[in-house]
Amino acid sequence: MNKSALQVARASYQPKVPASICGATKIVEGKATESVADQADIKKLFPNTYGMPIVTFEKGEAAKSAEAINVGVILSGGQAPGGHNVISGIFDGIKAQNPNSKLYGFLGGPSGLVDHKYIELTSDIIDEYRNTGGFDIIGSGRTKLEEVEQFDKGLEICKKLNIKAIIIIGGDDSNTNACVLAEYYLAKNAGVQVIGCPKTIDGDLKNEMIETSFGFDTATKVYSEVIGNIERDANSAKKYWHFIKLMGRSASHVTLEAALQTQPNVTLIGEEVEAKNQTLDDVVTYIANVVAKRAAKGLNFGTVLVPEGLIEFIPAIKKLISELNDMLAANQAEFDKVAAEDKIDYVVKHLSAENAALFKSLPTAVSTQLALERDPHGNVQVSLIETEQLLAEMVAKKLAAWKKDGKFVGKFATQHHFFGYEGRCAAPSNFDADYCYSLGRVAALLIASGKTGYMSSVRNTTKPAAEWLAGGIPITAMMNMEKRNGKMKPVIQKALVKLDGGPFKFFASKRDEWAIETAYVYPGPIQYFGPSEVADQTTKTLQLEHK
Ligand code: FBP
Image 1 (cartoon, rainbow, N blue to C red):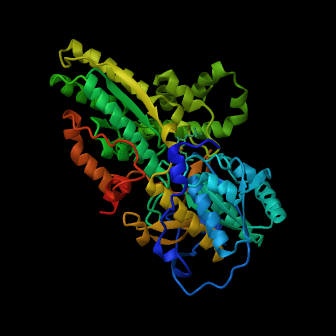
Image 2 (cartoon, helix red, strand yellow):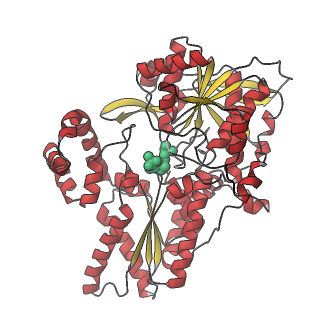
Image 3 (tube, rainbow, N blue to C red):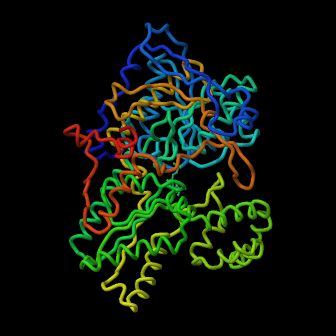
């Protein structure tokens, strides 16, 4: 493999881990858990893995020699920086327990387990990928594991390779998969444990015990670097308003973190739009007002951050999507046969009058995307909706009308950007390199302790790594019931931006000043070496949440 100088230098970086898991450990069991909501339903669906205790690892007596074990690992869903370090942490963890243990990687996501596509991950392979970005070591995919046939196919290959545990590295949907699989294998007494690891740049897989999902730190640093560069360009050229859409699907954590790092003029937070029951026109008016106020000061430039899931947060559109999902789920076979050019008409005919009217009023680019195929987990593919362009056009229209009334005096020229894929495979920051490796080591400990249906957890992450706390959280404790593809399903509850939380409150206290002043901050690129206050900063989100 050809390597850059940075890759060569990073290959020898030894990630930091919690002091409690260096050397011999003991497992300490806490209180029994309950699911976050819908307890009776979740308990019924997960009779074997419901209610298990939270566990922590503490320093313990010298370990007895452990038996060799074969473990399988799966990368699931969207890429996130640090995935390779989770795998190297698992590898080092099981080898430390017994050098004869083996790690198999299933290829291309959960489908690798079902289709029996795998490789053995040897030390030569692992060493090539330490501290690198990407998921290319074994690839990833979004196949949903929900059919008994899939679970049984998985079991077949586990038996063949003598695999006693599977680790699924993924977001909320993928960890839901992990939980369903753990329950099934336990109910069947199949002898295969299943452990999850919290991954997603979106930052929406977190709760009291999972402080952050890995990849969020690096991805938001990359986006903030580029947003800072754009702000500097805007402030130099003084002629464009930059509309920047940021990944994050159904939560605005990425956008909020980037705003905290770069202090742009306008930041839209989907969760607030929903809470305030705003319409698309309210959002457009808010942006146009900021543009007009800056123009009055002779500032005909600025930056606007837009979360990619914005559309789904606008209450009226949310209701429309919900009806659309049910309607499409009920008529999928028929809808699939409808010619592409007739699909919009078909949708309009099958919706209630109110939603049909709203659907027709949307720009075609948006309505077409809303009616298109969902991802395998039933999500609208918001990354394909060009909200940044749509908003820029709508603001331009509004300003043109205001110009006629003398309410806007100035120029409004726009540029559009979408940052998502740019950050998902970046080389992990020191935080993500350490956090991911630790998550992998902890997953190996959970396996050695015989646990199944747990998510690897590393907490206290605003402190130096040596003080981090290691443990496991029962996945059922994070679950609730939600409608997916028209049916109620058990899923991990998504963590949205909390409007009464530290990060949003800090942002809200500053945004009016950032709107009119040019208060940009230019974070610059991620630093891997150098002073700790530069190279080891956690996200502002974590800092403000744990203040
Ligand atoms: P995960 O939730 O699987 O980590 O994916 C996150 C994400 O990057 C979202 O931010 C984005 O909407 C989506 O994946 C894009 O999906 P795809 O990679 O299929 O284009």
